[in-house]
Image (tube, rainbow, N blue to C red):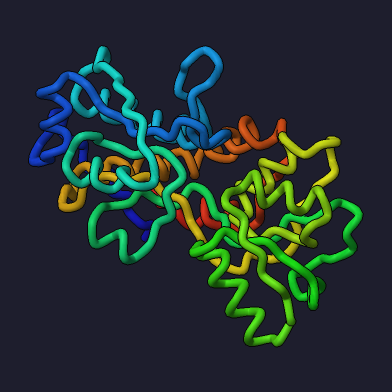
Length: 281
């Protein structure tokens, strides 16, 4: 006897018991938190429009909210955020959904809820294109720049000590200075967030093609969107929207839209993450 397919129950319109959806309906607006200069993830373009890969994915949630509340003219508001205030603005309800470059960690899950993972990065190394190194171990005895106090410094220092690589760590104040140290030959590499240094190498290296990123991910830093904790209905709506984007390959298309022009192809780890999170309805 063949299996009987059971139809999924229809989802009721309206906010239901969701505090976040009730808040959105009362405001007649959904508020998105965004970064101002984290291209191509979340940034303000030359026309003062909020754009980016993270933003486009979050728009899938916005459309789902409009459909759920039956409010097609729901206003969309944007609030700029940074690394120091983003969690607080989500936790206190100032923004409904944060769409930027936030790493999903267990400690942060004590404060906020996260969407499915939509980007995977980690510590990698920026070097000159003519550098023959393929992994950080190939820089044994060399000078490598890091951002002081960063997880990238911690991971490199641990590997350096464990493998007795004899790498001399040099502190850079920011991404631009770290890259400049490499370009000028004052250091042999710069260990930092792989996604960010790939974008830097593709868009700011002078001359074009002078820098490249090498090595496996020394850390695992998955990006997710943030929302308030404790609202299971809204969290499920967000998960559905992302799962739909993964299942339909729309997420891969958005990745190609934003990273393709930079010559950055989607990593196998991220494709696997999309497939695993493409849950059925």
